[in-house]
Length: 639
Ligand code: 7RM
Image (cartoon, rainbow, N blue to C red; front, side, top):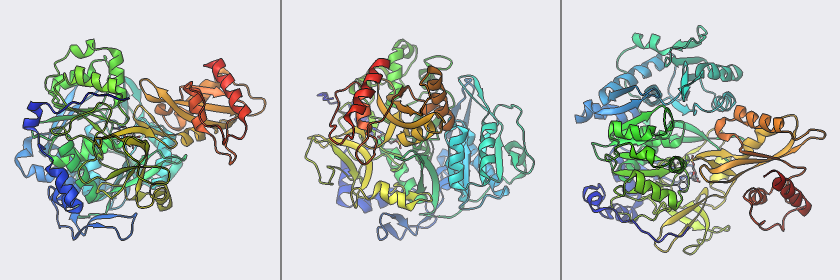
């Protein structure tokens, strides 16, 4: 872990950087709320706020109380009314290599009409709209259109299964679903509308489906329920006036895995979220007007919401949206795109970088990456050797790397270098962003000395923080605010070194991180026990060279059921069906019993030790030591 190399910002980068000194840190430290108010001045408000932060009903914090604004106005109208009118907003690269560029004016027009279509379909302020779409510009338009009329969007990753979609729609009580006829992934056809339809029919709350034509495949349309976007868009006005939203009006919901089988509907509201992503995009990515910014995430994840859509567009940046995958048609697709559009800032995940490392540098060398000036990493801890490869082969030792720590809950980047001033240490996310306050504490909540590992907590509210969990305020309080009263519990372990740099160690709870995607062990267990042959299941994340973690399941079967290879496949497929391909277990171990504490809790820590081939940790709370010996035996037999 320990790495003694420190990388100060290169001179040429420093000279041109937006932040050249520690003024932001000093201003935030002197008066945090005033700092955020200053940042909020960067947005356009219909009415200024009366109070920056209201803590009277904590943990239901309210930011920019009394302020009125509209998110789509801030992402579009104000740029259209400026020199950015004809600047590229979106460069879209389709999987087949075709591309479209939309200027701010064009995007503005499209979003206005999209909003008018939704309005005509009966969507009103406060209604929930589910967006189940691949990475196409219409997905971004649908999001912005919702914000224009005050509808609350919830994007569901298009790789999620019908069952996962069903769960989310049902929790939301959504009225409208926006999808496409079909999508392609690595050239393979995916009937998105048909998948969505199955979920909807099981739910009952969705009144209408709006279908954007993407592939032109034949789909069954039910009159009165299903509408083609291209048929409605010709009948609506070109302009739809932006709704005046309250600072604390809900903006969007995004489901994220927690420690139980039910995903959490994380709620973000209007002003605080926008101020947070606007500010962090600007300073972390050292925003320059001429940048071409590419975040390889999907809009179904918070990284896509905050740093493909809202942060960049609120700043008037040019973004790349890519429909495909890094290995299709060949393993140099990302480098080809960087070369093709002259991408200047490239933001991706450690898993992707490890994969590229494995594919080898020959793919990289085929392309001119000289346009790049800054790199970013997000989603998992980045190993120092992965960091160094990224630095050397992609950044060509010229580009700083911003390792950004944050969560769906935090909405915005919380820990990150400011690339013009922060000396980088490979593997460390470095320092809290100005105005963000973090501490490392022990189990009792006592601050720990330097270099001791503990829980990472956030000690004061920040503007883009989640406001609650949809329909479940009790869970909101319990999951985030009860563990260490007054502090936000991140679920991550970390240590702080003698320079104040933070080293994230990963999740300490039952959330696992596979290729930067958050999965709940309980949710996968829930899927496994749906099989009639399964008595009990325990799922863990075990270390994986490329994916950060891989899903490993320990399964006990009912009397008389045989643990065959077929059953193993069946169980893996069941998880894919219930959750999606990202949750597919790598390993399934059949075992007679599971290790439990006296209170009946499965001891996942011990299973992790077994799966990773380590000496067993503390077994003193284990009820029956025999169980572990047996699992170990069967594991070694199979492993
Ligand atoms: C943005 C995002 C959040 C979890 C978080 C961490 C892990 C994210 C980093 C990281 C180490 C990083 N949101 N995580 N970024 N760990 N270094 N730079 O990923 O809600 O999907 O996941 O991801 O464990 O708690 S998320």
